[in-house]
Length: 411
Ligand SMILES: NC(=O)C1=CN([C@@H]2O[C@H](COP(=O)(O)OP(=O)(O)OC[C@H]3O[C@@H](n4cnc5c(N)ncnc54)[C@H](O)[C@@H]3O)[C@@H](O)[C@H]2O)C=CC1
Ligand SMILES: O=C(O)CCC(=O)C(=O)O
Image (cartoon, rainbow, N blue to C red):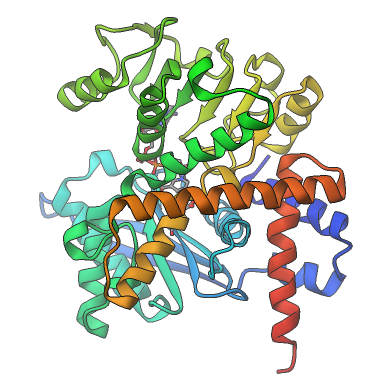
């Protein structure tokens, strides 16, 4: 199912559970603003190439719109729209004072040189600079982008508006980035997993984990699980997949990937078929790459007891139903990966205050926010007799709807 149809279906289910007014339901489904821009840049060889960039600003009832920018060949308007909507519910679940947005450029960043990426990012920023801002819409990294991308956006934006560190988060520490932001999404995934497992009297150190994606989110989640004594028994990325039933030494794997550019042929494991990864025997499956990877084709073969959605919308609604019937417990994306945007909020606060926190404070506050949100979701599950996804959606949608009503409808 298309990402936008899937996200909207979850939203509508939550609206029905909450008994939301039809007028509010309709208004919350329609994005505040959709931006589509042409970005033409000279390649290093002098030829010209054109890309399409998007920024969808979904909702700002609770505060400035917030969300990452993705560079990936599959970026399209519907997907960006779905991801922007998810950000609105996610920031509300985390109870941080933001709305939701998302952006992206349809490109293959691995095939562009650093200078081509810089030109593309600067042209994109020139096209959208009037529509983003510290108190309007604050971008951050997502798939295919990183702290360097944010530094270019900050620099280009500042040419038009003066030095503006809080216009982006996830930037380098030297430019006002927050300690702990790079690891934050993976760390939040682990805090969320710990909160979930505690409900079942289990802990990370007793369980086996399979992780799809070994970029920012997947590699940090793997590293922190490994540090806690959890056994990561299979990992994949775009280059392939590896497994070791006794547990992969993640510290060594990170070194191997840094030196070879690939997970494959790692001495401490065997190469495996990446198609087998999601259905590999394990306690906890953590999809940390693309959307829609769990679908009606593979859901019935999944063997994990828990799925922690580190990626955005990795499970489509058909798979959700199949997995639920099998008794698989799913920690939903709008909670599980909210650690990134939560520390982005801490970064924005630090920039506005002009005061830097130490890393211990960032990590402690992140744990406090993730634990609080988990208990808020559990309360919604109890009130509405629903699963964790609907618990999270009803929590987020209810907070956004309340803010919308309080702001009023007068023109
Ligand atoms: N970076 C962040 O702070 C946040 C990211 N997310 C979500 O987490 C997911 C991953 O994002 P990042 O780690 O930031 O991206 P990234 O670009 O750092 O890493 C993506 C990883 O996915 C792998 N990958 C791509 N296609 C794959 C495939 N077909 N099979 C297996 N692996 C594949 C890549 O090789 C890479 O290891 C995305 O869904 C993103 O929206 C969610 C919240 C915050
Ligand atoms: O840190 C942020 O502002 C947003 C991160 C993001 O794009 C996400 O949570 O999906």
